[in-house]
Amino acid sequence: MKARTRAAACLLTPFFLLFTAVMVVPIGYAVWLSLFTEKQSGLGFGGTETVFTGLDNYTAALGDRAFREGFGVLLGYCLFYIPLLLSGALALALLLDSALARARRFFQLALFLPHAVPGIIAALIWVYLYTPQLSPVVKAMEAGGIGFDFFSPEGALPSVVNIALWEWLGYNMVIFYAALQAIDRSVLEAATVDGAGAWRIAFSIKVPLIRASLVMVGLFTVIGSLQLFTEPLILNKGTGSAVTSTWTPNMYAYTAAFDRNDYGLAAAASVLLALTAALLSFGVTRLTGRRKEKAA
Image (cartoon, rainbow, N blue to C red; front, side, top):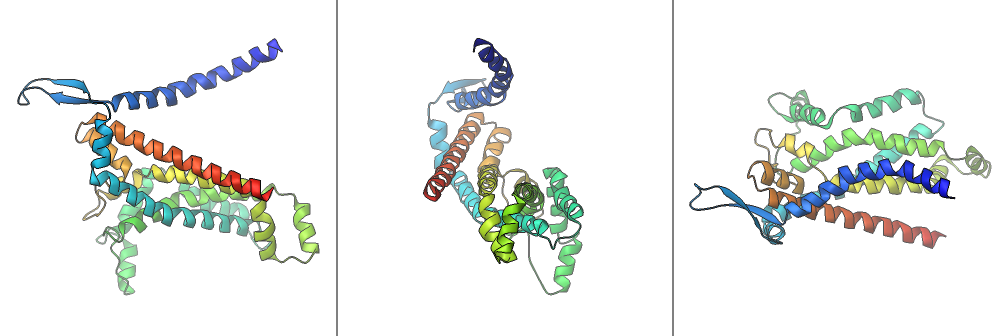
């Protein structure tokens, strides 16, 4: 028993050391940093000093309209992006898993390749495709009588959602497809013998059997959506873009830290965003847990 305990300790120690170094310590430092602020003495000609302010940075962040509006943008993004991503990835996975699909490996690779493109590069590509003076897509739309400004207040959110979908749809499709491939084929054959059609097999048998994968992808998508940063940051550089430097909470924290040099406020905003993500993750897991209990 002691030998097993020592072996487990030896195997787990590297993980806990790495977890502490890359997770616990940075989070602890962010919390500590959020309790302080830097102030200049005199009329601004003196040096700066670090002053303990307690929860003042949290109050300032929550009292800032730009920070609160950033959560409103995130809410709209989640309501728009998450259903499209999950339903689209699931539909593609079901199509590839069906007997009607041809050239599965080619389509798997073709759909997954956009995820291999770094997020910044993908955003730059789409900024080019969104720019009226440069984009062949915009010119084709205008030739067809369709006028749409991707940088306008109405078009900014759909533009960001489109970029994120292009990046992550294939990745999540692969996860769903792998889960579908793990289903016992005898179950599907029995359903076919019983007279179930393709639609009935897909939505009454396949989808319930990969519920765990759906929950996992949904949870990770919620967490990833709250960390929205790269795509709107690049769109912010577009000509006449409605995406401001504080469009999302992450951008607000970035601006506070590197444009205003207010690291205490940036840390407080980051901690508030992390708490929001933790609460939503807890809510999703509790909700799915209750559904499993009811199903059992």
